[in-house]
Length: 409
Image (spheres, rainbow, N blue to C red):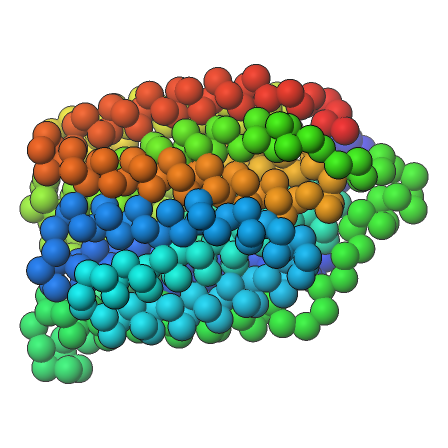
């Protein structure tokens, strides 16, 4: 009885700063889900095809790959809270410039800025949560944070699917015109600014100090070798490759394969967001029973049969596969983050997360560019198979991480 009660209280006894970060993630996730749904359609309205969509997705991830290590050092130097604020401001400004650009060179430039700013804001969240959250709660909180970012995609995808039509009525233009998509994507800028508000003000780093004062295991203080940080980041490389094969083209896949309109695609992506949000919440209870490392690896493997469902020619089975893929991936990666953060000293957490982001971005950048070309040449089947293979390899790398489930310190 006594062992169960504390676990039940985790969700209702979080410190107020933690709830503020979760609210920030909810708002920023809403902005991201609208952008993910509409940006490719905006590019199509400008006259570009799937290959250009893949190229621009590659640019955004390349920004993370090129700027990732400097961003990690910046987070460790400035502190994660200040890094989030700077990242959000630059992200909003980058989107403003992006929406007033149409030439490919300008789109590439501002997409690079947006990608780097997103990386700064997103990478800093995990070190910040690690600082203000006790170790016993981190798996649950990381899952809640991922769920907040992903589950809000339900609202973002539904609303995002309706925004171009509303914008078209307001501006008296066609629903799939450039002007309609430009107005609709303005909501991304507004939501990014609103996401600043919960992060403003003091966020005391008390969690680890309280643990030390209570005689609990002291946080890691020794610096890890660079080889260890690289090994921690390798699963993210393969996860990025798998994601780059699918997510830049998710909306185009359902439109082109099954003839869906914008609202129907938005609804499908909303269902996937539900799966991702639920999955992120399921990760912590599962890993509490079987351990962070084993749980993260097994959950990553669960995405493989889900990907195979997307190869079927039926809309219901492809939608189910897309739903399950999001569920298993979203359940897996917060647990892997918690595992790595447990084994990393505070002074290297920004560097560790940024290195994982660099590897993930590098994998995404390479696969998105190649997948955009491969889609034009061969269709979606081969790139979905590549994604399934990379998820298997990523799970193996997690399972063989040199971190103990019992004591990562």
